[in-house]
Image (cartoon, rainbow, N blue to C red; front, side):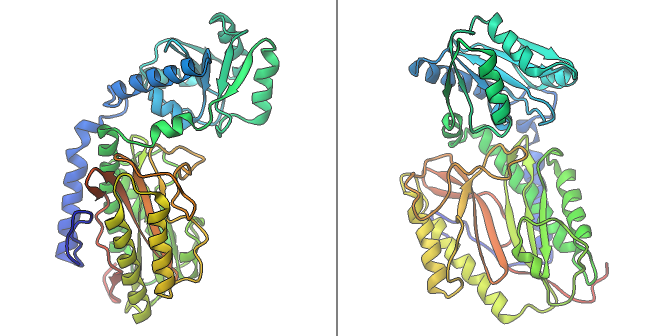
Length: 420
């Protein structure tokens, strides 16, 4: 394969070359550590966060909304630098003039203060109602008769709790701002793209560690542990929804299944997926591996998947409709006879990901996707057939695509009889 403006040259190497690749990934990880910062220190995203709040306030003014309650965990991180757990309700109120007021669990106040730039906050004890505190804060801010927006698509706002808030504020008018922040998040800032690059380098290290741990009789748990260990040692967040997805044998088609006690036998494929985070930003990569000699049809199928995906990447540039990139994959799979149908998307937007979500479903590559690619968008692109998968994390640039993940794009083959 030759290098062009849209794709980097991909080598099919192993052994010493793989060790060199790991060294380069480690350099990438360590080289970005200063940019990314450490928990508890001033975030490189702080200026971006403040500007995002100003942009949200402008949207509120344009829609004649007086304030918005932000409670989606990923949006709390995106705007304020703080990711609350789902244990108890927490939120921030953003007013139309751009001021921010937090409602924080007392147990988490120290963490909130260390990672967020928001200074005005009220706290509640575990035996107090966070909604009573929220309503009291709305009254204090003189918003009890105002127009208040809510994120009705938030995983952290239940129907019961939304109705409870409305009932406690009978004179307020409520609006829905679902999707507003998702649109803002679609294009990544330079600092966000660096986080994705760092997460991608960590993902590559995790793939290499799992491949090195493959041997006859190894369990899924042992392989997952190898991937987690490598990723965490390289700097992955320890609060990601998951870091490794893995299956062997028939379980390679599960993709999102739980790890089990299956043990690897010669000739079995292994599905390896790394999805680590760097300061909340996720990058992902999928690779198949085989212990022993790979069946010829499996090798051929993988090479076809790579070729089809390379054609997708070559077509990616700002202004192209997502459905056109999706069509390249579907037509390619059908023409190659790899799949009669492909009942899911061929890629999706990623960025800050918090539990319970594993992906951002706002921008999906599907047959009907009319939205257009823009510079700074980051996606996880994936294809699967014959029980194997391949994927990359990519960033749309003004000139085409930057492939952030760099694991060798080949079927990973581990020989029998290796030392454990």
